[in-house]
Image (cartoon, rainbow, N blue to C red; front, top):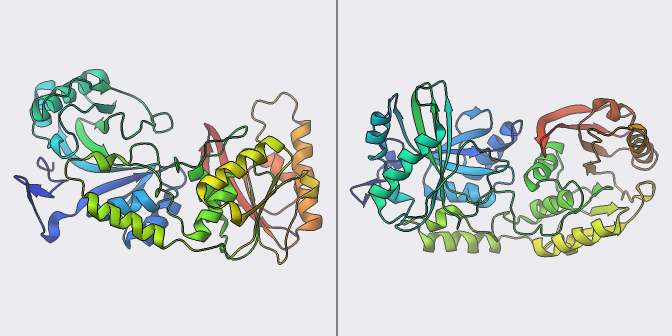
Length: 403
């Protein structure tokens, strides 16, 4: 097993280590099914990537790499730092090793701390008891942490605490091996700070970005969403086309770390903002029959800084606009899960298929769907791009050329 602090060799006795071996281990989490897309994204951001596993991608590097992935990733949910790993089959062993962790790298005196603990196939199976031991270790090491919140058995979907609600540590005990990671993100990364207005069944920004990426959109050809809701898909597409960093207007947990390099971070933010393109090279068209949804979409686009890049309109599906030349249709229609009468939904999918086949021939259509039978009503030869979940519902992205 690795020795204490082997996963975090940046400092020795408080002195920065500038040697090549000062690289650290990181893990970028994402919704299951999006790992391959995330791996390609991280490779494009920092030029390297590690192993891909269920729910995320490993990578190594320096603090700048960690900050860059947080700032620029459109698909990751959060980025954690691997800080220690050791064997622990008794509370005595756990307490001894917990006292050796350099908690002070991530926590200052008096600041709250949160723990997310998972125990599987281990002698130490009580997650609350494990969290209490770590909380005590933080108090002993840092001092003055009187407002520690113990949070256990929570998944990323619901654990969305902000950077100011306390430093989150993710602890996993599997087969008596304890691994500890420090969250560097704070709020989940889908929080871009623009979506204050939502429509029914909102689509997470990270899923929308994965849809746009997975569809193969070239950022030059027209993009159409004829059922745009609160506008998440066209907004994410416009941000990509304008080279707008999704994290440029939010805070991250690493900004609260004692050794955070605020000057370097400020430079990175300023560089990202300076690199924003003045306009989209592509025409982006978004419509919905719901006036309230379009009002919300326009407000969100304004906050995202892309309102001038998207043509929003209130339109029935049959009246959707498809510019020439042909481009991409990317949309997230209703799923109809647990609907007692499926007939209206079948009719909707059939109408969508009829509309695009009559008026959008040559377009590539990408659709997030929960039911392959509904897709069949569209009469388009779809292929599956990825499988994931949205709002707890199993879905998949399918794509095909409209004939």
